[in-house]
Image (cartoon, rainbow, N blue to C red; front, side):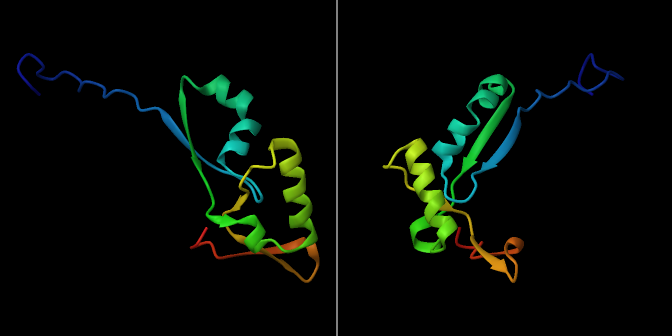
Length: 110
């Protein structure tokens, strides 16, 4: 304890704002996810820092299935044709297809 503070409780350090990592879903990007979360972001902007992390794999380069094609088409209808759509990983489906199980490949690249 410093002079004049003998036995006193230590000064509380300034509270650090909560930080939340936001990873967009498949066939998305940080801009799209920010738009999807806009009401939440506006409600919490004074107390929470949202950190958007973009995948680095282009959806067109890794999603060749019909679902991937439909997702790209839908996202561009809603968010604009100029959107670069990204993935954090490549989803591989098990024996039951989209019912699972799911496997994620190339996480080290995304």
